[in-house]
Amino acid sequence: MRTKAALLLLLITPAISAQITIHVDASANRHPINPNIYGVAYATTAQLADLNVPLNRSGGNATTRYNWQLNASNRAADWFYESIGETSAAAGESADTFIRDTKNAGAEPMITIPIIGWAAKLGPNRAKLASFSVAKYGAQQYTDYWMPDAGNGVRTNGSEITGNDPNDANLQVDANFQQAWVRHLVTQWGTGGVRYYLLDNEHSIWHATHRDVHPAGATMDEVAAKMREHAEKIRAVDPSAAICGPEEWGWGGYLYSGYDQQWAAAHNWSSFPDRAAHGGADYVPWLVAQLRAAHLLDIVTVHFYPQSGETGNDVSTSMQLRRNRSTRSLWDPAYTDESWIGDKVRLIPRMREWAGGLPIGITEYNWGAESDMNGATAQADILGIFGREGLDLAARWTTPQTGSPAYDAIRMYRNYDGAKSAFGDTSVSAAGTNPDEVAVFAAQRSADGALTVMIVTKILSGTAATTVRIANFNAAGAAQRWQLASGTRIQRGADVAVNGGALSLTLPAKSVTLLVIPGTGGRRRTARH
Image (tube, rainbow, N blue to C red; front, side):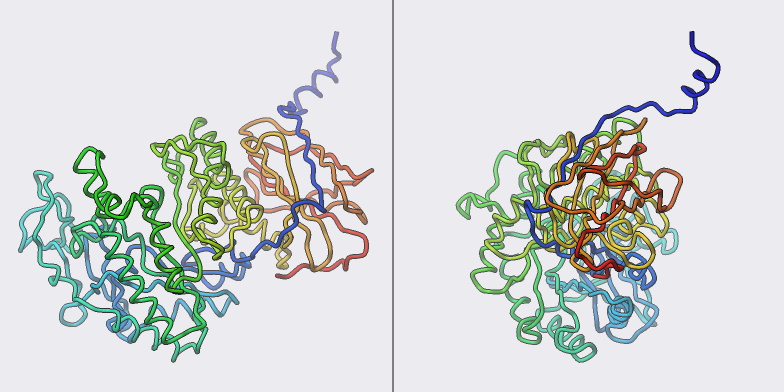
């Protein structure tokens, strides 16, 4: 019979729900981790400094029709196809402010150059203009509360308004117009002052997001020609700039042009005439090949979002488990994406095949639930995957709210102690049992020789009794333990002893734990990258 003391001990001791063994080999699979994988979008100066991240992207649908001369943009399908001016009328002010704020934090800006051929225009006294005026085109399903004449372009019976005049809220521009903007940026910031130029945004769905000016799906030849022309104009003004593209939205946009996506949707997905006219070539690798042949592309970049609802705030048990699994689409050749994609995406290896030796980047991604630890573990898993798989550049869409679990998941890699200490910059081999439950990443830090081990505990309840076995690394002392768990910010826990090349600890469900193990012969100091 158990004593009262024994029963009390059972009540206060959490059940061990998993037994995990992790193997780290500091001499295996060594390769540099590019710090540019930790990028974000539209971060403030304070966020960039706090996160200690090197890239800040300006992108999205509104950048496709940015008019640098008027300092205005059209919000497209995101907000009633309205052309809206920034507060300042100074040419290029909003972009210049973004660049200044980014540089003030020691980060590099990424600027999107429009290539669609249209730019926002404004009315008298910088008044907003609407592409689908109710007064001109009739009653519509939805209108802007703040501008009732601006409709969503859909009649009350559900049919789309077609044949609208794109000049209502926009004006036609050419590559010379955009080259003048690049020249302005070089004048403001110097040659190489803007390191990264992105060739517009998600061209293969222009016919949806920007249908007021581009209602027909863009063909492979159209996009290739626009990209070549604009890349040449950028090169002529700033030869040191890195040109990035094609910036496509996701799986469908990797395979099919806008023309084919629009055509197939209207024809039961039975044929793809644009693809057929190009020898059955997949869209994105075909585009990349055209630009590479002309030496007009420096970094192959695309966007990727999981397609089963992971990007939202759903934290039901089934969604959390799916969110845990779906990061495999970034790398795993054996994983079949569980969404409508239904294929082996293995995105990073696939991109490397497309690139033919060029660097690769994912300039938009998001796995949702940023206010929940499930979103934080997904974010930590993704950053670990980027480093292990050798991605060259990434930017999350957008920056998580300061203090949120997803925000702190980024800080775990770049500023876990508030003193800019970071995860290692040379990836090494790390393996566990099941990455859907516990993912592990390891890297050695060149600044002080420390071995850093990031353990992403994805299980939804209980704890994980974890043993870490380390090969080919001589620990000079106990491991620092830094942890992000439910209900807390990043905290330093008790150090963990390293005995005989191994250490043991118990990890809570839905947590991110960083072990910093000092090495013999290395300088013991804060690592700043």
